[in-house]
Image 1 (spheres, rainbow, N blue to C red):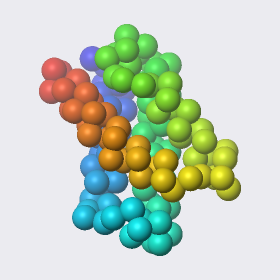
Image 2: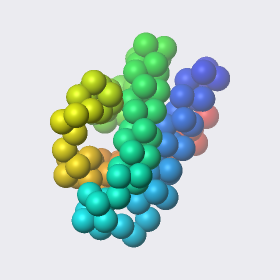
Image 3: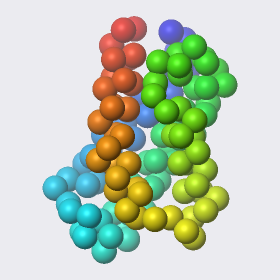
Image 4: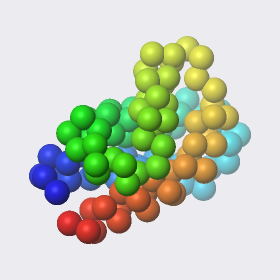
Length: 113
């Protein structure tokens, strides 16, 4: 794996871990009421999506080993360009439903190296 691809995977992994740290043991109600937490989480999703986009352009074969790459990039685009219509429930559901899988897949790819 090229150094740049590895660096992008590491950026994704760090962003996932930051989201988990920012959320801690918060509930959805906590998340919905805390605009600083939401902003911090959304920023990390932007990093994940941008890093995934760059990785796709750099090493398409590598990204085929990660689930829902196009949805990850699309989610980033929605956060950035549709910022005024972000649904906190969708963000929360992505945190609970998709981040653990992304973490496992990216961590496995980094461990292969």
